[in-house]
Length: 462
Ligand code: ARG
Image (tube, rainbow, N blue to C red; front, top):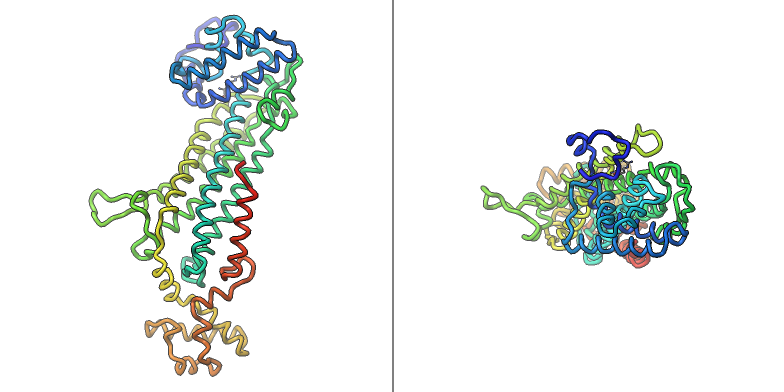
């Protein structure tokens, strides 16, 4: 046991209590942020005349040597310390003696951990934004290459109307764009510095909170010291945004699993991104997509866990808040890995474009267009809908698609059918006539792609 307190106590802490209370096993992740925060704190203390220049130099050198030694593997983060803050401070005192004891002047572990967690989360928000942007580049490339790759669009997982692969992928581009907007939003709201809030009520030392905020790259200091030490909203917002990212990845994965099935065969996963079966030699399984879908649950779990932890906590800091870390860290790792693997999987996946087109042709996806054709010949839409319904029934009976029915037979359903009907209901026409903003037609899609490109060009990584 190695702890920062003890003066007030007459007995040793019970070992089980000590272990239950300690957080170093998981908050060692905050090591770099902890040192970074201390460096800024010390530099401000000297500027304010609270520490001498000599004390500042000794502490700074000491902290930098601890940072370098841990990074080089020369100093191991030892679990005998209660938390990462104690580890750094104890090592500093070991290295530089009494000056090290002044590091914690005007600071509490409450504002220290609030700062460390915020610095760590801010970096993860930026990393997640970059990973999302990379995924969107891959999606956009597929869109650009597949403006005329026809496939069925579904509702209720039943073939509905033909679309293109570019159009289908464009839907995911929009989802991930919203995810990036959420990252930006969170960044803007969270980028204020809690350091200097002390335990809860600030401090009597003349700290310059503007200065530490500036040194650490924040927009400014947070405004209320009690809120500063007890706010984890930014982390909840991040976990909510990550949950939404996973929901999107999971839906996309589900589609890829379906498309990769023997029945569909719309896509083939690269060997590097699929796995075999130990018993069935014919198998090539979409495990990566399944795992991404499966891991969604644990990310939602982290969000629920933190919301629940925070809901009953009175102001200001309470130890419950130590529970903000383990599941949040797990969620951050999980989402980053999922984004990396998913991007790799879809950038190496092959499309069976012929099978997609045949599937679009076979499922009466042009039935609406046939009804629209009758409308152009003066038939009211509701009547046209009925006529086409009867034609579809006859086609199902005969095992043919609409365009395989001869004109003579079509005319039995309506005199309005002419030879131009076949052109009007071809897959190409069905798609290419849909050029309202956001539609799958080539003109509309070229505009959409231009906006996607413009978006990526004007939205660099956070
Ligand atoms: N390990 C604690 C946490 O993660 C650090 C803050 C401890 N503060 C305290 N007063 N016990 O929340």
